[in-house]
Image 1 (tube, rainbow, N blue to C red):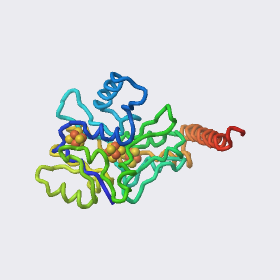
Image 2: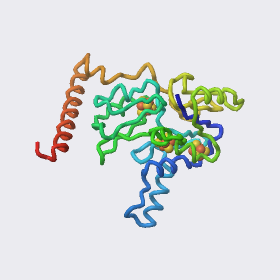
Image 3: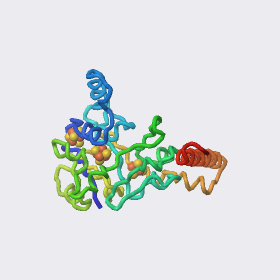
Image 4: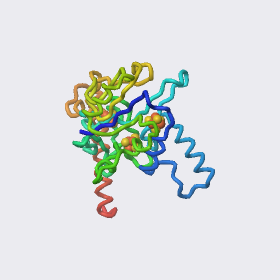
Length: 255
Ligand code: SF4
Ligand code: SF4
Ligand code: SF4
């Protein structure tokens, strides 16, 4: 199992990781059809992003009250992902290498993953009708020979590293600067591991509320109350509509 270790004691908040993610995944800033000033404005805007969006699959969070409170945020690539469990279209897959990836061809825009994710990661792209998020650079790490994720390669201070999960946990534990570890089996099972010198709540990092997470799809399949029934009907209707749209698309619009 692979993982990404984010050592916050080394992160300088430079945001090179954000730019690298955008470049590799062809997210904004796109250059086609834009003037030089538009490109510059777009670059500056996205380079300073601090909330995940359809164009920002990783961000460095910002606490306006304390500039020392920041951390690189992206999908945790959970071992038992609530997004996978709650996708009625089976559009999200947890791979053996650790990555959790949304298949845009299968995504029906139902958005239960957005509700269920304990870290607030998936973002719905209104224009394309699908959910977007970090892929752990699945298309890089599965090459032969495998490439590191783009954000890992770009990080000038080696605050983000990629490798075998057990080895990364060992590395973090052996580092005397690191006092707190979260993820990769430490408190939470995931293919992203955070390492910090200060408690996580001091940097605004919210751990998963493991016991409070609803399994929304299960509730809909086995509805316990009226609200669940209403939600279930709405989701079933969306599912059916999307299926119909796909059938029409495949038949060249003849249905
Ligand atoms: S962090 Fe959220 S989106 Fe990422 S794998 Fe976990 S549940 Fe899914
Ligand atoms: S692993 Fe890839 S997709 Fe995920 S944040 Fe890093 S560069 Fe972006
Ligand atoms: S590139 Fe590295 S040092 Fe710069 S913000 Fe990202 S994780 Fe931090």
